[in-house]
Length: 338
Image (cartoon, rainbow, N blue to C red; front, side, top):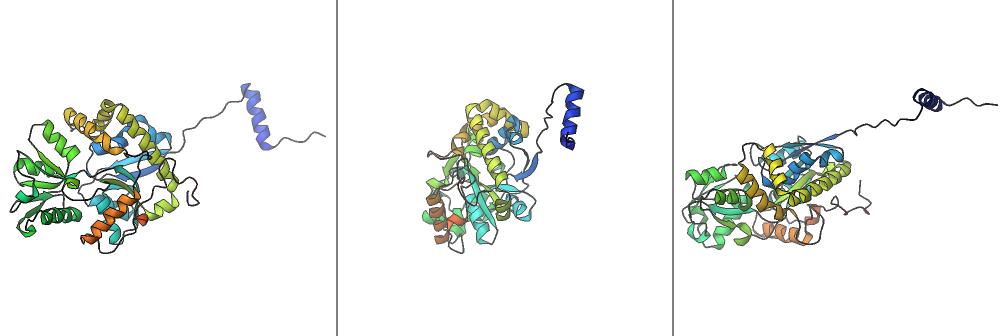
C-alpha cells in the first residue's frame, strides 16, 4: 500500500519537479531595534559604536542600533529610566548617584576604563587647585562634578564658598575660550584637551585622578534591571559587536576617524584624528580581561569614597551596581545567563 505524501513532502516534491533541484531561500535575519543614548554629542569616546555601524558589526548580530545624542548632560539616565532608551552611556559616579536615589539601573560594561574628567583652562591659566580661590569654574551641571570640585578644593585648602560655579552644559570648551570661566571641571583630557592642544590654545589639564579622586570607569554602558532580566541576550550581542568594532578601530584609526566624522560632519578632520588617537587606549582594560571589564575592587573602593565624602546617602554593595556577566566569555556558565 502506497502511503500518501504529507503536505510538506508534497510541496517539496512539486518544488523539485518544477525546478529540477532544491533551492534554499536565504532571508536577512530580522533586525532587533536598540536605542542607545550617548553621554554627549558624538565624539571619539563613541568611536567603537560608529565603527560598529560602519562595518556592519551590529547588523551581523541582528541589531539595528540607533544612537541618540542627548541635548543636555542629565538626559541619558532620564531617557533610560523612562523607557525611551534601551541602553545609555553614563558615568560611573552618575550611575551610583542615580541608584542611590532609587533608579533601577545597572552598569553592564565599561566604555572608558579610567577617569577622563579634568580640571582644565586655556591660555595657560591656572588649574592648580591652590590657585583657584575666587575663580569662576564651569561644570556640565552634573551633581557629582560639583562634589568632585568641592573635594579637590577642600583638600587644597581652598574656601569652596569663594568659587563661583557656572553650569555651561556641553559648552565647556566654548566657555573657556570665550573667557566666561577661568577653568572648568567636566571637560575630558582626551576630547576637549586634545582639541585645544591641536588648535594651539595652550590648555592646562589636571585629570581628576591626579587631583585626589580615586580611579573609576569614566564611561559605562547602563541598562534597566528589567532589560537585564528579560533581554540579556541582546546586551551580550551588542557588547560583543562593540568590542570587535573597537578592536577594528584600534587597528585602523584612520577608518575609525572617518566613521566618527560620518556621524559628526561638523567635526574637523584634524580634531577627529587627534581625539581618536588619544582615546583608543582607554577603551580597553589594562589587565588581560575582556572588552568592557569592570574591576570589582575598584568599583567598591570608589563607591566607599563617594559615601565617605557624602556624595552618596547610603553605603553601596557595588556588586549590585554593575555586572560583567554579558562580556565576551563571561557569565556563560551562570544559571542566570539568558
